[in-house]
Length: 240
Image (tube, rainbow, N blue to C red):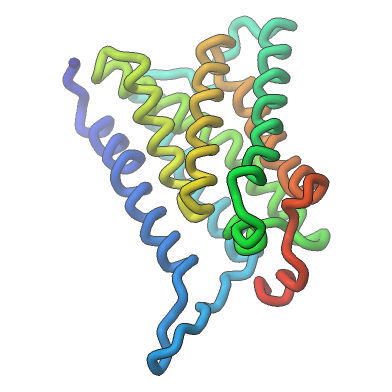
């Protein structure tokens, strides 16, 4: 193991402790019913626009911090020395595997779980929501890959001197911060995170992973609807 500076320690604390803690806390608040006069009553569901705007803002902050950490460590976030047909094909293969996991999400859930899945509340409805969701997807593709597959992974590899362990820790943290979608979704996110780590290792760059991540997030609403994982009827009214 190797010692790291205070800035790297703070970065590890932020991504491995603080953000997972806040994600678990948010998931409990978002998914738990409120108690009113001894009777269970559903909490008001945040509007999708609020979710998209707030998430995009937090992801931008994460990228800014990651950018500064990359300069300190140092690490080239957008380094792309050898992008060719081989790397592009690897990205397409990774994207195909990620899309193949969407039907798996249906198979591991009951009909009731599919109807009440928290992720359904986040699917965009209408042009305005679709535009904001698209912005969030692109920002997520860049920021999350830079943070989790980039700087965090590099700090962990340097600290632990073990690339496999570093990948597993990073993928676990990434899955936990998506815990608002439910634990079954978190497992699938963990698998996707491992796949993206493999893609970065194979291509030698974060750029392909950023494109794949963003394209996948952009395509999710359409893909979910095509395989009957779309929004339950009437959700538009309940979600604002």
